[in-house]
Image 1 (tube, rainbow, N blue to C red):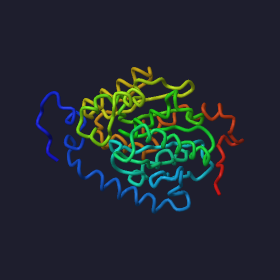
Image 2: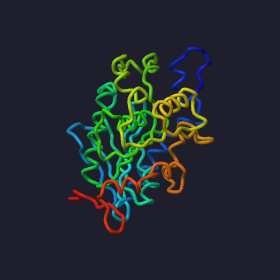
Image 3: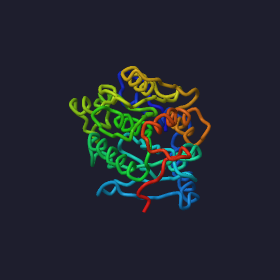
Image 4: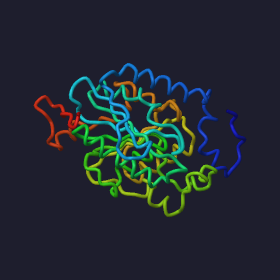
Length: 289
């Protein structure tokens, strides 16, 4: 993919990722292949295609650790709300799974069929369904557009009691600039929806902690988006050295990575607050049938 010539202002260039990443076109098929291999090897620790609503894409996959999980990490995929599904990211469950956490990965209805406000409500419904499957604290993370949806799960207007922490990765936290892009032909963002759906304009819910993660080598617009959210929420942010928009999520597959450490930070404290822990410090599964 050829890098577009520089001009300013150029909102479409601001949010182009693949054109600025060497062999950017090779990443999606690689993700899909590695994710498929992960699912094939997961055996009975994978519960796939679980419904959280009546829609075709209102499904989630649930991956379980070897023992009773300490809680659950929900990962929401990206794709500018217009592409991909949960099936391309299964391998990213490996890190939290190795640390004893369950991992849920939902799909959601994409634009132009759905507006972003509808997607927010779908992911909230998915989180409620996941909470019905795995007891204990919930950490919601996601990448790019999924980072936006993950951040929304921590906002005060979304009443998800199970959510104790959100870690948006390369999130789109302020939607206003996207109104000037060509993709808004499908997203159909309006000033009113941007105000209601931009996490940077909304309050973080009391009792929810947050940490914003972004690749230090990402497009300036994504660095700005991450920084804005961290400033507005007064929470930590990490620009991951050397990482760009497509490989910043790789660290989720490594149980010893700084990203996984950040995801699970405070998990034990969250477990104590729930009062659902067992004698061995684990959280039992519920509704496994």
